[in-house]
Length: 182
Image 1 (cartoon, helix red, strand yellow):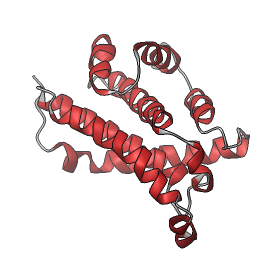
Image 2 (image 1 turned 90 degrees about the vertical axis):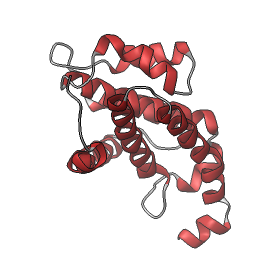
Image 3 (image 1 turned 180 degrees about the horizontal axis):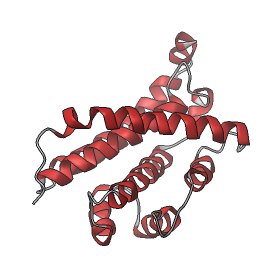
């Protein structure tokens, strides 16, 4: 199937619209002055990238066949959604101060202020404000419009997204190296 995706130009299209978004975000992360923030943003970017791959990378990506219907801004929105979600998780763990969230994310994410404010409002979750993955899923399928919004697809997403987060968590000591907890 990969051969058909490559020959059909789907992989090339994905690489031409999604990879520049990833590279742009990473370039902004590299120039952050705080080393701990660089590490947190890198981890959230890895989770976002692996989450997007769940949908678009062959052979398992269920919407690779439709990838030509998506543009660079669609991928900017997807990276932003996943990274914002993860930063609320970091905040809930006490790793990152929620009050600093918007200012830090606006410098790294390639979306406008209204989009950022909207996602921050929709995705805020924690002990006092529990929000399930169904909120994230609802926004993801608005962007990935060729993915049917079914209970079965949501359950697959919830399982796979949790797996991505868990696998990334296991690699945190290697990704983060030394940690400054001042």
